[in-house]
Image 1: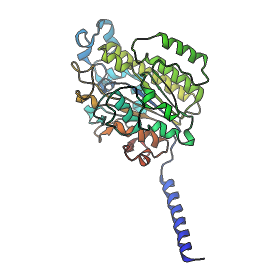
Image 2: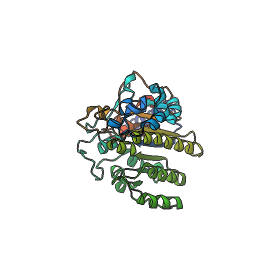
Image 3: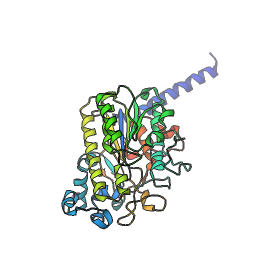
Length: 369
């Protein structure tokens, strides 16, 4: 036996031992599934402080029946207001997970794409990096590979990744044709078999119930996604809801708050469903965030974009078996929208940031310590 051969064998043995020690040193992950929900354009101000007094009026918030409406969401303290607006979020997600983005507590969460509107925000979120080529909300296929597509290419996730959205552009943002994942958005009927009787009904009612040209009410996207989850049990499911953005653009603050409250109800129904299914119970991480912020009340709350710098500020939350529960974060380093993709993958034990050099690193505090 030659010495070079012996040296090579020793080197391979040492590498094997080192790899084994490295794997053994990593905390074992309980997360087997990730459900990621985004609600379009929900301000951090409402999430953390509840209803804004500056907009509970006819002039700036177009709230016409203030006498009956105000008692629904107004309380004397920000903590009381936010909890009555989003009870599940604050009683379950925040208490048992982590929430980033309360700027009054020194927690900064922001986008890095510089555009501060939807397509760039969703793309940054799902790809892990901003793309200066994306400067509009046009319905064009995303040239970048999202973390959803990246995971779907792996055998463990093949046929187990799906994306749903109220906004019709979501299917283009995830580039479902190239990615090969199940996707449904806008008014398009859901056609991936089996199309259950419930899905057929949702398709019909969605087509007949139109208020905005590019997206239906959130209930259609949510119920379609929930039915798909029950039937197919994907490992990764992405859902984008849109009414929080639409009602804000319309200047209807009462409807904006009602839509926010419905998002909370959807999160509760989704989480309760997950806990009732053995495949998901104790094995699933829920991520919740938004694609962009909005301007300050009362003048700029309806809008967002490059000309409204404050609309870069967002929020994000994580709840799952591998994430410790300090709750609402304070006085910590900033986090960015671009970190969500790698964090999602890391919770599944996948090194997205290591394989996609331009992607931001995962949020370390969300992962097992």
